[in-house]
Every structure is written in structure tokens, then in C-alpha cells.
Length: 64
Image 1 (cartoon, rainbow, N blue to C red):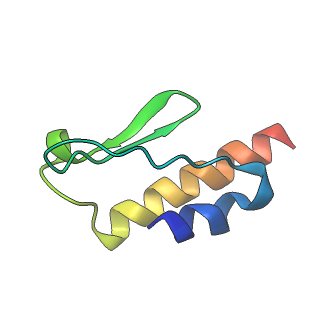
Image 2 (cartoon, rainbow, N blue to C red):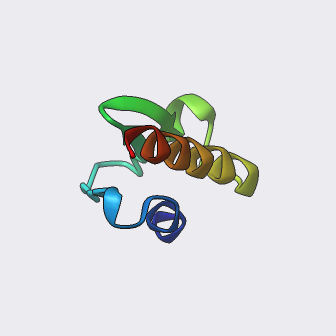
């Protein structure tokens, strides 16, 4: 999943992996939570990963 996000943003995206407890998995973009495993009921499926990737691409284009 992280490789998909790097592919979406290239060198314009900083990605941090921060260890959590009890299987915590969250994805934030510019401080905004876009995915939370707990609230969404599990790991993101392929469609959800594509949505997050598209969001990253859109935000990077808006900056450039």
C-alpha cells in the first residue's frame, strides 16, 4: 500500500510509518485523516487504496 502512495506522489510526498499498538492503521494527508482501519472495519481493499491514491495525486497536482 505504501508503494502505491509513493507512486502517486513521487518525490512530492513525505510518507511516515509510525508504529502503533493493537494493529492500528491510519492514513493522513496534510493532517487530515483519510483512512482509519478501526472506523472502516479492517484493512483497506483494493478499491479503497485506489481512492486514497487518487486523493494523493489530486493534492499533489493542486500544489504544482
